[in-house]
Image (cartoon, rainbow, N blue to C red; front, side):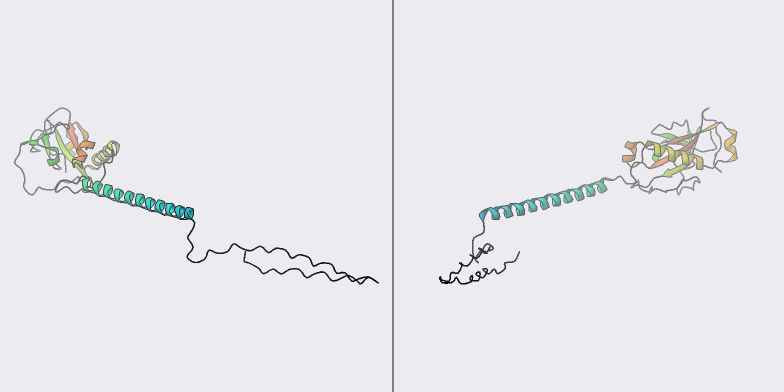
Length: 229
């Protein structure tokens, strides 16, 4: 509240004169003592040491908090940069199609067949395999008009920067590829099954992004033609 000026009350008026006696007046009422605000510190006065300590402590606390937040932001950025740098990339020439491939295209340089020791990442859509084992690390690719037990009929390639989607999602995508496959009428001359192959978590980390669908014959190398149109 602002300081306000206070004035003493005026003295009471004198009473009526007494006949034959002296005139007596009542003493004036004592004015109340005004309440004054504490005087401001004069210029150049030294502040309270305890107040200085509290202000200094608050300033140090704010600086420490800012430093902690800044370090946390820097660490988060470093972690994100490392995460992006270590993200597996797609193999050369395999950027990920995003669609199920069901129509083989002629290779630029046809390989001589039969060819033994072909690794799964080198399988081509339409390849035919002798004595096929989907779990094998290498297979023998043969001409489709020679006896074989399996043929690769559909392929899906995940983009190289995708995170591992999990086993169930990969199995579902492989099933989708099998459903999308278009087979020639000759396929119905054999007792065939669809067989799926998809990456494990370990092979995904090494760059494997392929989901394959094969038709296989349980009776062995009994197929003598391509089952694709």
